[in-house]
Image (tube, rainbow, N blue to C red):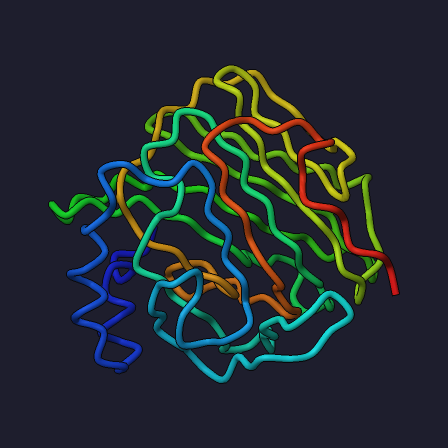
Length: 234
């Protein structure tokens, strides 16, 4: 991980000292489920954001969403919404529109107050292959890391999708529109407090071209019937 990762608030030049210090103030009893709606850019899920570039709110068939240009647009949020979760379900509704071959479009990063670099993180990524896309769900917890990437399961660009990453304590799984695309037996430890980026990896690499409608974070493993309803294709 590049050494400048922890300085993005400063490099962005957006006066984020308050966010940088406030990210450690996390609830001792976090909610069992938290939903973030992307209908504005100054606050997401009640959390203030740092804005990079010019992401903007659009009206879409699924509701309001934030669109990213794939070049220099991103949002940074000073919390890790699944900090401390031993099991989890991370869902998102998004629209990939093409762009670069590799895109890290949603990144949860452990970032201890000590300043030590644990490199523990959760990621939603996509790969764009011959005008279509596939999902990569990644998790690193201490010495253990796993990427669930199925390059044979390709989807059309420009449509809205539901994606999910689920961990039940023994198995890590990912889904697109409720259909499982990968699974692995793995031991993932809970991650500590940290921060989030949307539209780019936290170190400002691999920008995302597309839009994000919402995310939901649940501190248990949901089954597909419990997922958010996949968007209708338009």
